[in-house]
Amino acid sequence: MLKKLEDYEKQIQELVIASKDDLENFRLQFLSKKGIIPQLFTAFRDVPNEQKKEFGQKLNELKDLAETKFSELQTELKSSTKKGADDIDLTVPPFPTELGTRHPVNMVRREVVGIFERIGFTVSEGPEIEDDWHNFSALNFPPEHPARDMQDTFFVGKDPDFALRTHTSSVQVRVMENQKPPIRTISPGRVFRNEAISARAHCIFHQIEGLYIDKNVSFADMKDTLLYFAREFYGPETKIRLRPSYFPFTEPSAEMDVYWGLETEADYRITKGTGWLEVLGCGMVDPNVLKSCGIDPEIYSGFAFGMGIERTAMLKYQVKDLRLFFENDKRFLDQFKAAY
Ligand code: PHE
Image 1 (cartoon, rainbow, N blue to C red):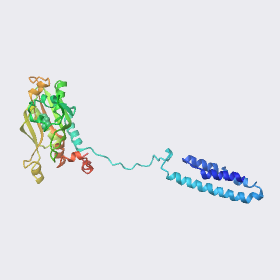
Image 2 (spheres, protein in one colour; image 1 turned 30 degrees about the vertical axis):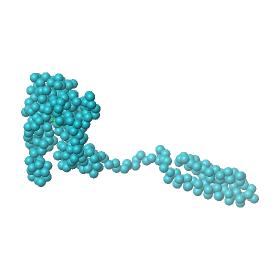
Image 3 (cartoon, rainbow, N blue to C red; image 1 turned 180 degrees about the horizontal axis):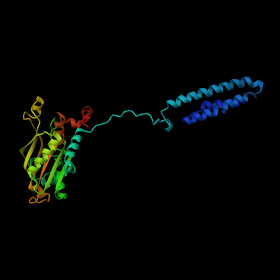
Image 4 (cartoon, helix red, strand yellow; image 1 turned 90 degrees about the vertical axis):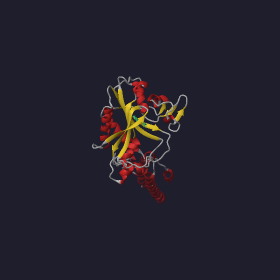
């Protein structure tokens, strides 16, 4: 009998458990009503008198040991990080997770794309690494044009020339080569120019360019479309003006300004004292470009326009330094939560 008590003592001392179930099994085995210890207390009655004292003492010790062990194991289990599936309370509400926000460049892109989609423009995309034909030659850039210079263009390979596209007009060449007019499309995308990084210029930025080709498309159609855009984007009272300009791929070419106002000191600074802000370049697609892309300029005509997204976002959100768009500083991005 006494030997049995010693065996149980050893068993309890050496017990290790891995789960709640193990602990419960231990309790059932030793401490529950029908467990070993209550059974031993029952058996105590039949122990011969001369052994009663020693047995009783040992049995009480065993009971204490089992109870201490049980509470020790219980605390150990609670503090252990290994949790069983049963321990996960699925009804506990989650920690509030902070929502992100769209990047301002993305917000402007989506808004501009939406404005043109509503009047039937599709969205087209193309590769960021372009060949000379799609980025320059098809767009009527003469071979010696300065934009092809190393100073402006990041070349990736020579012979054949591959470069990072300097504008998304390259996408429009691809559209014209592959589709028959009528064509109405806008191409948003990332472009690259080898420029010194400053508050007003970056070597990577985003553009949205538009192209409209059909029979009898006139300069007046272009002006009307751009006025629609300006009023949707900058507000219903917006005034625009077109100033003559030059691009190799359009003739005539123009730059569009919107009237910003000249009331505050900031207005003077932003508009350089004119009240007008340049927002995009545009023009009638040069017949040479149509010819290069397999479209007969005797039958079709069209217009194109292009704007920088960062520049547009700077105007819309009054951002003074273009570099902020590329730094992903949370303090900057958080300010657009309301706009989103
Ligand atoms: N591709 C011109 C640029 O990158 C923008 C533009 C597009 C101008 C279409 C006129 C017509 O600056």
